Length: 281
Image (cartoon, rainbow, N blue to C red):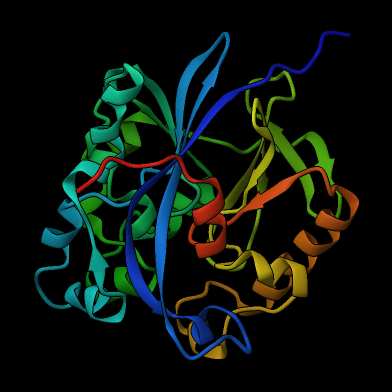
């Protein structure tokens, strides 16, 4: 049996918003924290480069300039720099947007989709239920799901790949996976609750096994202590009951697989420890 390939992985910062820790986790401190939106730049030795999420990009400021979308910026004040957009960082790795074969979209919230327009030749990989949940939404209905329609490329549907075969090896307490490359190096799994059709990605990388869990939790401590976000966040959650079940599943997974580093998309502690240094302002 051939060995599972090791993937090159760079974890990049695309900017941050400000949030209150006691909203991010029950019992959190009453202090403001920076929630960075990370993406993962991944190279498969045979299949080339892909991006896990598209993160923030400066166009989000334009997309939130007017009501009702400006409410997004009021709720989560943005701190963005053009050089932190995922596409803007590619040259330091010797890459251009054309080198990115696919962008895997964990879910359709603005802090994960703002950079999609910067990848005009990439395939977009998502779940059918995720895309269906936002495809025709506008105004407050879109905002209620954390989605900004202006961030979605006009030809998104023409270039998307919908994943509907989750028949790969199950992850402990989390269910069956989609073996993306068919060699065990990158497994996608449903992580319901926070957003319709949210996915996580377990990657076998040269820096170890990394489990990118998107916004199934906002702090790694949530998994360690099984504490969900505060009740006020139920307003933006697709299914608050499933949020807790997914956190419980991640906790059980972490107990069964202590070798795997769980990487939430916005955890300040994980950011400080794991994210690739970004260019100076």
